[in-house]
Structures are given as structure tokens and as C-alpha cells.
Image (tube, rainbow, N blue to C red; front, top):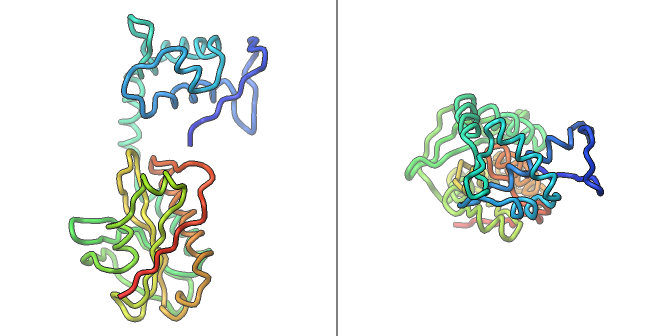
Amino acid sequence: MKCEAMERADDSPAPPKLRSGGIVAVERSLSILDAFLGATATRGLSELARATRLPKPTVLRNLVSLERCGYVVRLADGRYQLGARLLELGEAYRAQFRLEDHVLPVLRELSAATGETTTFQVREQENRLTLFRVESPQSVRIVHALPNRKPLDRTSISQALLRGDGAADMARRRQAVFFSAGLQDPQTASLATAVWGPAGILRGSINVSGPIARVSAADHPALAARLASAALSLSAALGAPFPEGMQAPELIRLSE
């Protein structure tokens, strides 16, 4: 989610102020950096002011600090581009990033809320591979050992990996959630939806699965909404924030 900056009406100099546990001056600088996201060319002062909805003097003051610290570079024509310091931060993020640190908390929370088994699976050519799994807290449950690799099939998790369209979901502000029952295993039913990363890259899919009698009898719209919310949170953590005001997910029921 992009940082939204706030500004004083008179734009007079003032010490940083706390807002909801944060510092407004820091948020202004971050909103300026956010304005470069998706840009394929350099940005001018006026463009940055429009993008951030901040007065030009405020943007200029922040740019001076950002340039001094290497986060932006001012070119000879007066326009700005991102600085190499951000590349260093990106490399540090890459080195420190562990997928399980982001996925497992989401799966645990989803399993606790639904009472069913949750998994995160990825596409590996024409197969689906379960990377992470949190078992249902209930005594009657579906259990598989990890790693679990299966061919892509007609089930919800496979269809989420095959048919998921992040750009379309963002544009219509509505996620696709797939439901299947008894298609690959006659004893299992599941719901699944895709998870995205930067630039709309498919990172995987999360699903909720359990005994067919129990999952088929569940409140599917409510279950789909909870699953979609978990996927939105995980996508944001992996670098693909969805727009605000997402609608209730579209539940796609798969059949033979």
C-alpha cells in the first residue's frame, strides 16, 4: 500500500509531528518515493507534486534530503530519478527475504479461523508443489506429507494456478476464488485463490481444504471472503498491493 502524505495548510516549516504512531515528515518522503513506482522515465518537480498532492516547496525540501542520502538523483535537466541507495536496499531485502516468514503466519491464522487445513502451493511446469501446510485442528482431517508434488488437475488449487488473473482482479476489484469437491480425491473439497508478487507475477496459491462433507456444507461465500482476505494480505506482503475497496470475491464452482 502506498504511503499517503499529509500537509499543513500553510506549508510553514514545522518539526515532524506524530500521527497514529508515525512521523508525517517521513511519510511525505516515502510518498515521493512511491510516486516513482511504475514510472518508466524521470520525474519532474511538478509531476511529483501532482502525484503526491503536496505543495512544490514541500516536495523540493524532501527531495533535497532524499538526494543527500542517495535515494534520488537530480539530473542536469532538473528532473529526478531513483538513486542507487534504493538498489542496495533491494538487494538487502532479497538477501533477508524468507518466504515462510510471510506465508506461514497467514496459513496459521486462516486454519485457526476456518478449522480446516491450509496450504501454499506453487506451479512447477505442469505440476503443483505444496511448499507450506498447516494442518486442521480438528481430529477428522485430510493429511498429506511434505513435499507433496502432483500434476495440475481440475481441482481448485490447480485452477487458481492455471486461471488466476491478477491484473483482471485488480481492475474489477474482485478476486476469483475456485471451489472443487471430489474431483481429484473423492473425500476432499477445497477453495483456492492465487497470490501475486511484483509486476503481476504469480507467486502461488493458497487453499482451504477438508473432508468433503464438512467443507461442502460450509458457508462458501463467507469462507471465500476469508480466503480472499488472506490472499490479499499475503500478496501485499510479497509486493503486490491490491487497490482499496475490493468487492466480495467471485466464487467459481468447478465441476466434472
